[in-house]
Image: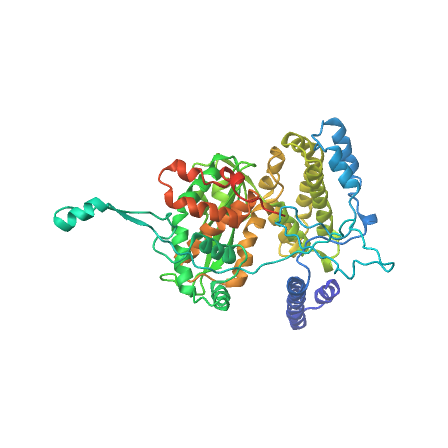
Length: 536
């Protein structure tokens, strides 16, 4: 271009005008070419990401040569911190140490809590005779185990409520019709759904099948047909709606438990509801997920809403004071900007942005450097979990090890933001991180806080898995019912309670609940010793 301009300057008149027009057009062509090249590069990067999401692994873990990792000495730094701070290592008994040392690869033993039946196998009388003619002597048994499974047993419970009448009054009534004959009838236990053919056990099993094992009602309908029972999905849907209404007081109590503790989590995902008034069937609705409660009393609450507006989170956390883990969605901005709420954004989202920006998936350039630095932060978090560190120890380890890494990373991002095009994938990742930086480093302030919002993402995953099976909800009332029953099941699992056992217990007790204390007695941690433990 400089040579062309020199030629233009050396000419005059009409020739110069023609050459100036040519140079101007040529310059515009070069700019357009560069713009298109950047666009092609951007689209090619998007295509690689799309192929990876469709055909590749969903894991964000990078496979790289350990010799190339500059973050290996990090564990030496943690060991130094471990010497400075008295770590609260878990106490292990001699028996557990011996078991750990004797652990061998191979088939795991069958759980001891399972019921067992003994089947004895003996030799025939002829086989008990030795070749020499003497009778063989019994010296013991060779023991082996098999895991057995009994299919579901569908049965009918007949309730015979006995009636009693006074014989004396009955004789008097024969002579004098004005005499009333007293009669008493035994009462059967109250049912969760009065006057229904469904027992509490059947209701609990249908709930578990759909909301825990993700088995749609139409498939359950076919299963019951194989047992010779005609049970339509419409009938089961009506049962689920009534069960959802019966557990509302429990859901309200669980929500209060989230607000009582000062560390909480939030996330949301889409759900399709076909028959929403005034909306197309293809419209997106949302299932929100809120987590919290004391560490020994964890709570998971799902809520169905039409939109993803931030006002939903504001309404849920009204009156809440504490920390809130959430992603970078702008709907949380007003909430976490409140003086009563400490906002903690998700570092996993940052890592995901830079992993997507890696050139050809290789850890190099700006994205590669940031991914390696983030790996160091996660190695610190892994170390705190390995040693079962207390919140105080976690805080000190983060201050001494994670904080310097974050300070250097911030300087690096600020420098690169001046030279990296903001429209590129790397530029977008840098802008995303710098915009949320103050909320990304908040986790350093308290050892109870977490580096990311993965806890909420894991909690919402069961709903996502169920959505893949049944695809949509038919009505808003059905979506609300799903949210309540998901809440009970996932909260039970979070408290290490087998969900079917928990539902059976509360379904028997709910019909007799009258006061607040009755419902509080049904919270998962209150009935833990009365239900089965969840076997992992």
